[in-house]
Image 1 (cartoon, rainbow, N blue to C red):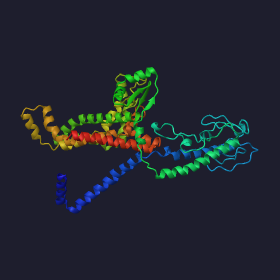
Image 2 (tube, one colour; image 1 turned 180 degrees about the vertical axis):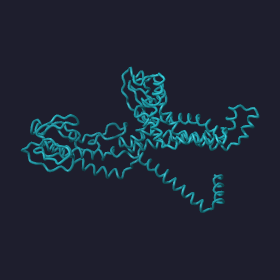
Image 3 (cartoon, rainbow, N blue to C red; image 1 turned 135 degrees about the horizontal axis):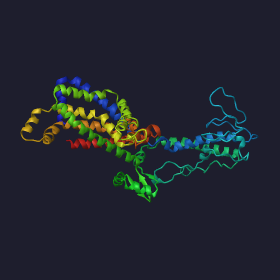
Length: 482
């Protein structure tokens, strides 16, 4: 703290109080707007139960299903029955008695006949409804129009039903009843659900809305049915043995349970650490030659050789690797040319199926973030210290261990942190290189929760947990590096 106060005082003497104040205000605004505020928003979202899992959302869906059921059932009404008032919701279906000509778009066949369907949902003709005054074909929305719906609850709470929890009568649509009776039943369920939605939304607006439900999804175990032979092979895998040791996999009553989200998270962090270690191994000798061993002219050429590839956009560099590892890409073409394999006979190596390919491309993509900090710090080392160590009889290994590496520690720390964070959060590399043929990285899982399945609250929980874990790893590394 005293060192910080001393630095601030020195800055004021050098730049003046006004300029230093502007600098600190800008830094504070940047930290709040770009770091603190987004994280607080994400934390709030991660602690909020998904909207579609709320009791009011389930009741609202019941209202919509009931309205759609009424709309469809009215098309099966006997022709001599009195017309019913128009429905307020559901899917609009043209009158079965006539088919209006269309000026464009999709032609609607006459409902008097039922044409064979080549795909999608087959909708039977209303005129062919069995029984006339009773009976109907299967209608999904009518089947779901019942007050006996299961609500979303934790496993510890067991099955909680809508009618039992809110003291509703057990109503539904009887598929064997006359059409008129079914319409009445569907409307009764819809009106009941509509009133319930209003009440539940008022209660939920004032209720405490934070919970750890979304984080429980991250740690939840999924049952994976397997044949005995498959189970034995799965249990013999070294990877699965490690998952069993750390509690990410277990067998209960002959059924395998895996914590799939946590497995993806652990695999991603492990790959990121390995990528960081490999980048350090590659970059350290490069940085040493660039900063301490080369002449100025040679250092310029080495520096250009390191920087020029990164003048190209990252996405283009990733796609360049796609052309290298494709079935007819550079690697397979060279192996085919030397006679190791035959592409025509289907012997090409499927590089995109191997995790090592993604691993190496990530190292290549982010290696510059490891090299630059090490070069910058290492270039400040006085070469006379190296010469003095050698004059005292130190070996090359001892020179690096006792002289070069201790001096370069700050650069190594910055390079490792930057590379690890970029590798752990990599999205484009694993998605483009593997194209879904490998296990996804955790960044892809977060993306799928946000944009594919529409579970943004669960995605926020995944992202926030991921950030915390990365920060813990970085903090441990900084402590080790002192």
